[in-house]
Image 1 (tube, rainbow, N blue to C red):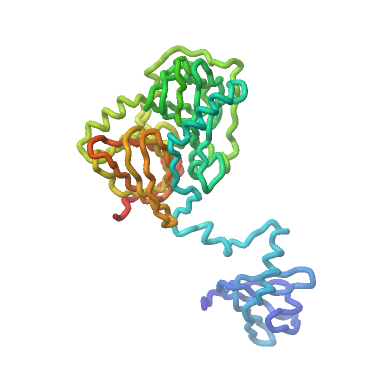
Image 2 (tube, helix red, strand yellow; image 1 turned 120 degrees about the vertical axis):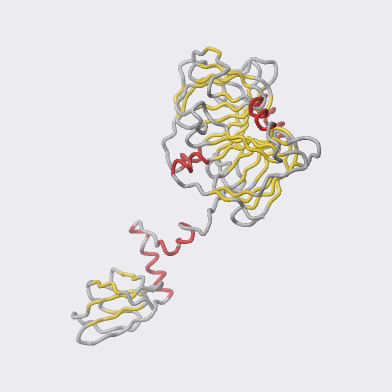
Length: 386
């Protein structure tokens, strides 16, 4: 028993439940730390529960030691807390401070071949006038929209030929990966082409619109930091007065990252697994909340096992393979992917990617919350033991 005393003088009880002690106005109370509770009735209307098993009553009667409370006493105490807008921390300590990161997200794959018919149907049923953005959200099976992971939102956007997704701006940051087709996006007056594999970003509170001037639909993966606003409710949007914000063509704008440059850098490596981190012209991550990286896994090769406190939303640019993902809960899952598929990886998962082709490399593009964690000083990364 911990004998560190915490002196406290409180109104003397009429009775102490575990012993029915006689009232004595000279008694004072001292408590010894121990994880249990003793209920002290101060009067007929108020109950005080103390987080200590032992109570010592000092005075002319000498010392008397109480015992632990009954279940009914604890239940009565706990039921008295909500009306005071209080809750006991000790009943939820393991949830508040878990032994490891405890994401709600679970590993999950969205097969593009399965999703495409629903996207195409939306393209036929949902007009420009019906929806400002024609998007199917990717909702993690263990969560609700807008959660694709605990911190990332993903959605598949379809734009028909000749359409314009009207100009607006919002607090949320957005990154896009072009899956198929050719279109354009304009950010703060700079009009950039969209081609397969390109990464295009929309910084916070920048006017932007999208369009399709080709003869075929264009589809891309949207990735936004929308889940963060579940706890920071400061996101909102403003629509521009016209569909298009005035712009001029600028294919070399800092917000566009063509796939050709990325693949060239990845292919220059001789390692079986290579990672390219997208950065802006200042050498920084693309945003303060969302980072982007591209990975190349050589034929019949694999990445090294890794573990990161970030959650990831991966998209397969090309190739085929599988990823072995072990979340903190230990429920290992193998995700089998092909070109254009998208899959979610929970935070603090052990991950290893495998290329199943013996002749062609596989390319993955991963969006993650690393910059957000870095800026808050919350990141911890390590190589996972094989």
